[in-house]
Image (cartoon, rainbow, N blue to C red; front, side, top):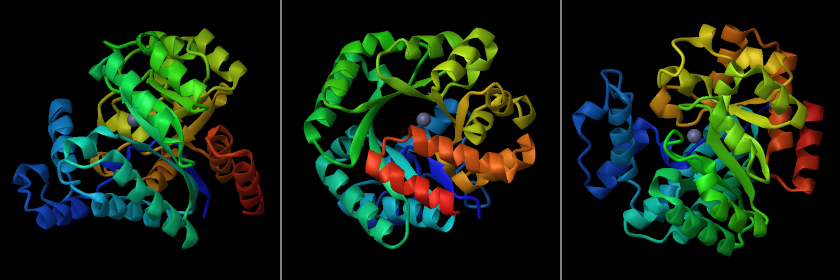
Length: 324
Ligand SMILES: [Zn+2]
């Protein structure tokens, strides 16, 4: 089995339909029948409907135990799929909205990470999401919260949300807070918006990784810059096709970016909502983009090198990959 590593998955959007039903039953939440297709998987008709579905599923995460369970679900599946390194993006506002402290949710996530790791699961690290359409002030508050945690598990902040209306420069102060606390910075860019959005993300000091970034391909000079600077793209092909940013894999630039020397990685983003998984993304890369096993191993190495693991952890991961 090809060893795998993932940098870009939103923890709250890893909840499987089966787990969502169990959480809903646990808390007496009624999930609308329209949420599920005839095969039991999630169903939505367009992007607003997708957002509403993730909101409904998120509303089922009512306590620490739920966070433990969804993290264990994801990491146990990751272990089965040969994942050696796993980063997850955590949204602190969701537990707040659902009536409990995000620190308590983090305690549960950390417990699940430690126990899954002890059972042979991946080494894990967390990022805290900054939701750009909530505005600069809200993102600064969240960055300050993340910086104040001083938890070994939390390694970065990640700017997500509506990139077209909220360019990264608006969040310079939030990034500075994160940087000063030694946290890494990731920015979602070049997914819904074009190459300019990637350029703007690259202008933020400390950015070494871009979430998605695939639309950089529309600007050859930018592709060259990404390759020269060694910036890593967290590519999510299944997500991009499911959300309609590309009509099919044939039109998707994963292969072109890779062959242009850009450090690309494979990621599942919101896997059950896109009917994918990290293992499925590796299969897609092989089947639709012709990646050889050696190239797939290279993508895993890219993720390990760009990950926010400590130096000692990265050394261990390199050894593990070398031995595979
Ligand atoms: Zn994302």
